Image (cartoon, each protein chain N blue to C red):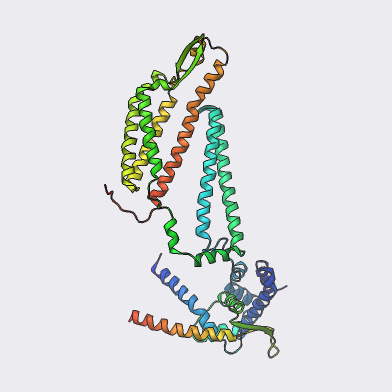
Length: 338
Length: 110
């Protein structure tokens, strides 16, 4: 087997099986033609000429690659759809993973080795989940790319009707019911916290008398001025947005700041010890010994659960706002007050 | 990116676009790969084997060329390519388009 045979065999390894023999024969024929021409009037030995010729012709892998029609996994036709699907699925995987983390943190708390271990496990799981999701989606799109499904895609592209844009939601339009609901609940919350804080209490009949244990203590109510400031800001902001009807970069940034500030305040309050009035002692003092521990344990785990939910919900909201903020290409650089 | 590299990239795109027309135009009589390479080179168009051979296959799979293996003059077996009837029709259309394109570009560049 001479060097040309070895070269052709090496190219053949990377060629599609169906065309291999034919392409190999053609490369051989060309190489021999070229060699014959170069031999004329040359004093160099055959081996040196062949080495020079093959070097010029190209590496076997490179030559084989030029015969392949599919040089990509997912082509330009399907790539935008692939990107969209990938974004959605990765966001869902990350969201589900965060919710899972929230549940495990209600068991471990926010400090200590159990917390560290839960965080480690969560992070490993998240990375693994994201990689698996990416791999599966890439595989599905690679299959679509190589099958008839791609023709269906082309058909849809050809039959595309600009009128269909009318049914597309405008990403800059505000979600009106969401803002109105926030307004109503913020007003309600402020009224209750300021005027009727005892609404949050446990009531029961003991020895023929109604007994009330307030759930929120004076420690909690100590934060009331801050809650009021946040609440009023929310009312002003949501009222403004309901009037504006449309997101602008400035209002998106304001919204993000309000969400983050609200989250920080909530976390500070909920991490303060003694904000909940139902303790084993307060229950025992009232003669409730049965299930006192169990009841107070359930109530004391509520802040951690609420913190987790608040952090997750705020994170999702803030990420969505950031995506909208940077994804919108043509936007007005100023705020029009209507 | 250096200016030279930018120029090379644009030239590469230009050559890639015109190569199919050049190849079809040279195959009114039978040629094998290497002889076609030299015919193109003699007329001033230098093409790599790694570009020409896959292009010949593609044009053949599109029905614009026909080919068969033959031994001529007791030489080694070679694959001879020639333009097909469909290829001739396409080449005529492409020639007209090319002339129009050259006119347009000349108007723009003059």
